[in-house]
Image 1 (cartoon, one colour):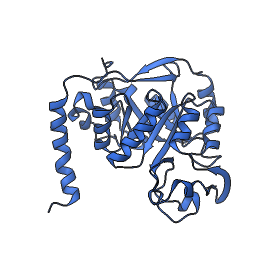
Image 2: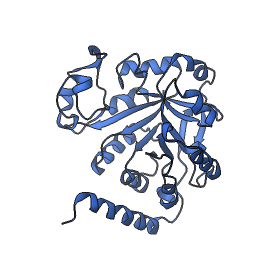
Image 3: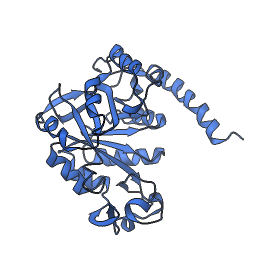
Amino acid sequence: MLNKKLLSRLLLPAMILLCHAACRSSKNANELSNVYKADSLLLFAHRGIAANFPENSAAAINAAKRKGFKAIEIDVQQTGSGDMVIFHDEDGNRLLNVDSSIDKMETSTIKKHPLIFKKSKTGNYVLTLEEVLATYKNEFIIYLDVKSSGIRHFRDIVKVIEKHHSTQQVIFASSSAKCIFFIELFHPRIITALEGFNAGKEWINGIIPGCLKPDFYSGSFKKVTREHIQWLSKKNLWEKRIVFDVDSSNFNAVVNAGFKNIIVDHFDAMESDLLSKPAQQTMVTATTAGGEPAE
C-alpha cells in the first residue's frame, strides 16, 4: 500500500494536469476594497498589535485600528465544535495555559479561558472568525493565515466569509497548493494567497493553470534574494507579492527593496508611514500571472 506522503506527491501533479484541462479562461478579477492610495504601502498588523496586547485578540486588533493600520494578519483554526477561531498555536499551552489541542476542544471551553500575555491572564478571550468578520470586515483588509489543512475546513471558512459578504475584505492564505486549487476552482470570488513562495519557488507560478493561480504569493522576506527581486520585476508581479517576517530590524530594507504588501510586527517609528497615507475607497485589482489585470 502506498504511504500517505507518496500518494500526496503523486496526486498533486495529477491535480495540476486535470486543472489544465478544465481551465478554459482566466479567472475573473478580484478586488480588495477600502484600501490605501494605489502608490502606498499596505501594511498588515501581524496578529494585531501583539507587542502590547494578546496576539489575535480584540484588544490587539483595536489597537491596530487606532495606530492607523488598514490591514491585519490573523490566524484561523477549527475547534472540536467545528467553529473557526482566531488562534495561532495547535494547542492551548502557550496562550491559554491549557494542555489540549485546539481541534479537540469545544469552542465553549476555549472561550472560558482568558488569553495569556506575558505569562499573565488578561481580560481578553479567543475570538471566532464569525465575530471578527461581523465586527471588523469594514475596518480592515483581513489576511487569514489558515492553519487547518482539510478540504472540509477550507469549505467551512469559505461559508463564513460568504455569509458575511466579505469576499472583497478577506485574503485566504495557505501554504497548501491543494487548498488554493480548491478555492480557486470552486470559489473563485475568494481572494487567495499561496504561502511559502520564497526564492527558488518561482517555477510554481509557471506550472499552475491560469484560472487556478492565487491572487497573491506570500513568503518570508528572510528568504528573498536579489534574483527573486529581479524575477518579480521581470514578471511584473510586485502587486501580487506579500512578505512577512518583517519588524523594526528590516522594515526599511523591505520598503527599499520595493515591496508594497507587508505583514509587519508593529513598532512606533513606523507610524508616520501609516498615518501619512490615509485610506481611500480606491479599488486594488488582483492581477493574473503575467502581471496584467484579469478579465
